[in-house]
Image (tube, rainbow, N blue to C red; front, side, top):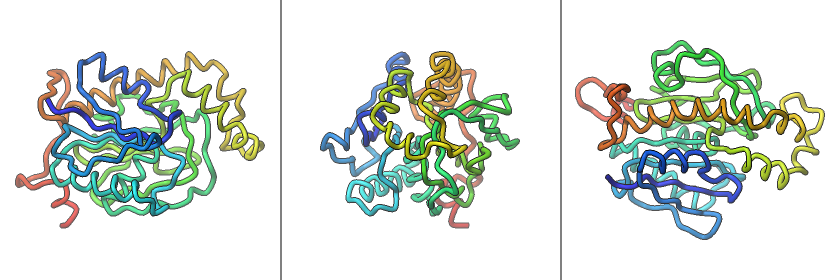
Amino acid sequence: MKPIAICRHEAIQGPGYLQAFLEKHAIPYRVFAIDAGDTPPRCAAEFSGVVVLGSNAGVNDGLAWIKREEALLKDALRLERPILGHCFGGQLLSKSLGGQVRRNTVPQIGWGKVLVTKFDESRHWMGEKRELDMFHWHFDTFEVPRGAKRTLFGYYCMNKGFALGPHLGLQSHLEVTAQSIRQWCAEDRQVLQQWQGQSSVQSEAQILHHLDEKVAALHQTADHVYEQWLCGISGVLHAHFRQPKRPHGGEGWLEVLKR
């Protein structure tokens, strides 16, 4: 099968657990380290799917690499290559589908509960639990694009996830590891101190409290989400998971949005 393209924008926001998951299942991938000077690919046809990770930049910043990644996602949508967006990646997926991305009412940093909506798509992606403990680090929020379904919502941010067919956008981080969270807190300690006292921003001590147990639970959720996402990729078969239903009439997902 063709490799999965992974776009990384910050060294401390790498593919982490996703990379370990893909290697465990012998799924080929290629990491494009934008922070290290790599250029995002132009054509989605070279890949089985596209993953976009987090970034300190905003999707509306107008940077050249952001425009190039948005073009990549639109090409992936046209070719029906499944897309998985983590945080910034979820925002860019929303924008590529015509959604708006704007400043959230408050920043959200640290561990926080999200609720799973009652749509069939939500159970498909997130499993049977109605509440999940996720890791968050964001200042902006995406709009759920037309035609998509909200999969997750939270107290500090209403739109924590959306799904459209084989594509999933998350306003949280499933890919983090205990090591990457510790490093993130250390490198961005000034950010945590700046927002000290804000109820939506945890302190470093709160983030690291029972960290290994929280990350282990998070990775159980990630296992389910990543398996479901792989079901949408041609050549990857999981007999106990159903592939996302295609739109009626054989048209693509972009055609659904144009109705």
